[in-house]
Image (tube, rainbow, N blue to C red; front, side, top):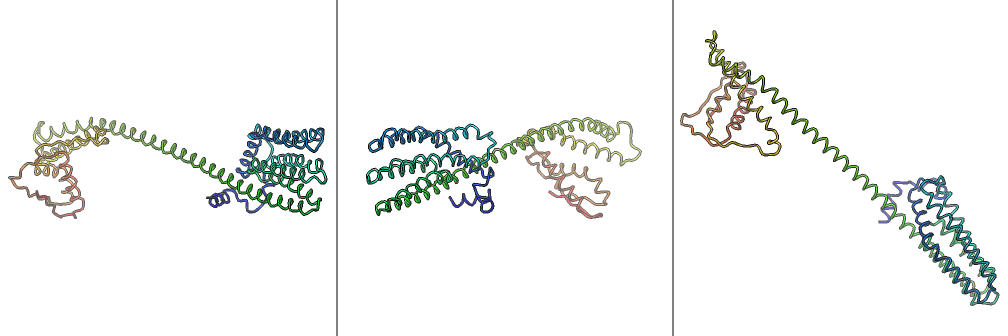
Length: 390
């Protein structure tokens, strides 16, 4: 998991080349988040560290005058106060602060160095020659302080190096100055322990960094999912609006088409029945009859469009009634006969006289006949024949 996060980090923010972390301002978001974690941890233990300093100073009263202990305690409080002030300033102004990342690193690392210096002073101010017990107590107390600082600042290595590194260096110098095997071994143990602390802090920082990367990726994914959801919702709304507009258009056009169609059917019926007198050309009677049948069929289609809401809801009503297959086929022939005559096609029928009626939907069966017959006329060569049988 850590390797995956590091790979994602390299893809997102290429830091393998170019300036180091100390030189980069604000182009690596997780660095600023790590600094924010350090500030938050520092403020949480702001009241614990003075207690540790007070216990250390009170214990040293066994060997050191109270005035020296009080002076050192005041120095430790002052150095911590500087760091707490900077942490509070960062917490209050991090969103609108004009300070760059490396400036905050420099100030907080300097405050940590000042704090480490105050804790290193007892190695030289309180150190009593020949008192191995006190020496061991001083070194053990400083190592305990180092452990506390590692816990607080482990999320940000520059602060760890500035504080813990200086305390370890001071202990090593003090032990080396003694020159005795006991102090050399003590100094070596301190170095080994500090190296272990550094490795632990580095791993803790890597873990914190990976968690921040995962958190950022999760938040980005949530934002993308929300954007996709909003986009889908907008598309659904547009589709619904388009569907409503389509339904309104079809309903309006259906009404507009029925008005002239009724007139066409009325006049064609008058012509087909020769109510105004016989036609001069006998074929006109057949033509007017075909016009009337076609108009009647078109009117049924328009009525279906008016009932579009039922069709869209899947509730189209299918009528169950006795249907003559032959009669429906003959009606469809009248609708396409004119086109067939244009192509000089002959339509032959083979329907037995005793063909029984079937139970079904008349309009649907007629539509089936009409589709088959229209395709036959369309795809049959000129002068060909079309046969219909049932």
